Image (tube, rainbow, N blue to C red; front, side, top):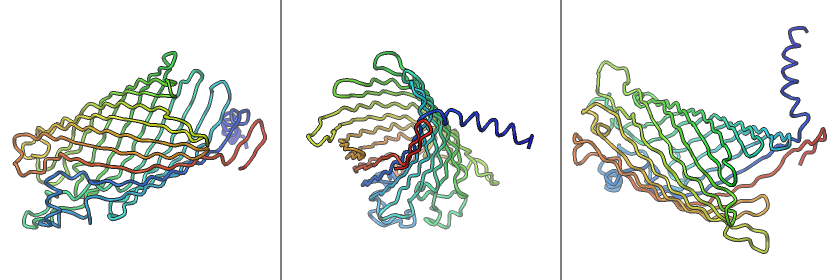
Length: 364
């Protein structure tokens, strides 16, 4: 009994704010339906090879474009102590299901803790788990050359990410944010040289409460990925090194376009992403990464509508990756450059499942 008293005391201390504050349990359901005309990010050379059908073993998909169906669900427990002080714990699940290529399906699980303070300050910490993310068929250098195209094997990885962020008001309508993300990526046997860890930091500056309920945010940061670059076999230096570092940048804006007589709020948004990758491979025998530099750009536009507990958004996105390879790459090599177009619609519904205010409980 005496040993249990300290544990009971700690639990009571943690529960005290919840007992004295308003609480609620929120549910949010989401559904995204999109079409992607190059969902595995194939280069023009790969797309033409797939179309010609000259190397079928290099592909494990029925088509290079696909429809993606992505349902999601989250539960959020909020504790509001008043005067801007709020605690929130959120659990989320999301799945990606492909209409024509079920082998590319994957799922994401995440949890996030948020502490909100007076004057708009906010602290967040979270963890994200990604299972069975399919990259594409890659050539396994450890298999005998005589196998030909049978050396192309399925490459997929699991990933665990830890995230954290802080937002600080700058006075008036502006705020500054800091965000950090650490990733641990584990490839399945056959491509363990690509197992890697990554660190990413972002600094953002935003403005809210602009005319027409507008919001603007610009962000810049740095990302570095460090790969194992070896599969620990007897052959030294025959593995790819996918390590890189580079700049991250983005700019986004959102504003209200109007409001209908039925209380539907219409919004428009526009976003731009810029990323660079400087690959650090020091192996001339690695032609796809030695001396390679990439520049990625993405542009997205959307129109949204909100009515009561429902939100909908239609969007279109264009992505382009320009890869500049080192001099050791043959002219016929897969360059890593790609272009794709995506468009879709997002739907979401949010509602309160349970509330408790000053000791009174209500279930909805």
